[in-house]
Length: 192
Length: 192
Image (tube, each protein chain N blue to C red):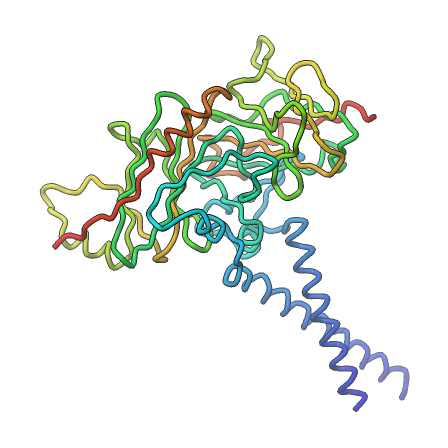
C-alpha cells in the first residue's frame, strides 16, 4: 500500500471511531431520563403511597435520599396519579417566611410553581389535571361565574407536588415542618 | 477480514469513548444550559419544562429536585474567585452582598450534594440569621478550624461545593441578567 492510501484508511477509521462515539454519547444522554431508576420520583416513591402527604427529612450528613437539599427549608410532598381523576392541592401559608408549591412530572421536569405571595385566604391552592380532564373542566365552566381555580395541566399522568417552607431561624424549623405537613392532595371530582 | 476486524475495533473504541465522554460530562457538569457568574454556576433551565437534555440527564442521575424558576435560583460554586478548585485546607471569605432576594441561604456540601458532618453541626447560613456590618454587608468564613464571625465549617478533608440559593428573587426568570458584581465573591484568605 502506498503511504497516501494508508493515511486515507487511517483517517476513515478515526472518523468511524468519532461517529460511533458521538452516537453513543447522544443515545446515553437521551436515554438516561427514560431508564433512570434512582431519579427523584423513584426516591420519593419508596417513602409512601400515592396521594399521601409525606414529610421529607431535614437535609443532613446522614440523610442521603435527596441531594442538594437546603437545611433551612422544611419540605413535604405528595405523589399524584391523574389516571384516577384530577387532584386539588392545598397548602397553608405561615405567618412569616417563604413558602412555595412546585409541581413536577415523573420525569423530573418542573410544570409550575407558586409561592406564598400568590396565596389567597392563607392557602396556596391549585387543581392538577390531564389535558383531557382540563377540556372537561373548561366545557363545564359557567361563563357568568368563572372558576377561580388555578388549573395546571400535567402532560404526564404521574408526578409529584413538593411544598417548601423557609425557617428564618434554626428554632423555627419545627414550625416550618409542621406547616408543610398541612399540604393536602385530594381527588377533585370532574364536572358532570 | 482484516478490514472487518479493524472496523469492529473502531466501533468498539467509539463505544468506549462515547460512554467515557458521557460519564465525564455528567460528572463534571455539562457546558450547556448553564450560566457562569463569577465563581458561581447556574443551571438556568433546570427548573422549567424546557430543560435541555444534558440538564435533564444530570437531574435524573443525581435525583435532585430542582428549584422551580418561580421559587428561586440555585448557584453552585466549585471554584474560588481566581478559578482555583475549593480546597478544604484553605479559608475563604464569602460576601459582602448577594443579588436581590427575599431570603437567601449559603450551604456547604460534598460533590454529591450532601452536607458534610462537622462538630459544630452547622451546614449552612440563612440571610435572616447572619451577623452583618452596619451597612448590611456580610462575611461568611468557610474554613476547617473555628473562625470569628459567621463560620461555616469544612467538616472533612475532601472536595466540597458552596451552594447559594436565592428565594423569591426577581432574578429568578432571568439568570442571564445577574451582574457579576452583584454575586458574592469567594476570596481565598489563606491556606493551612
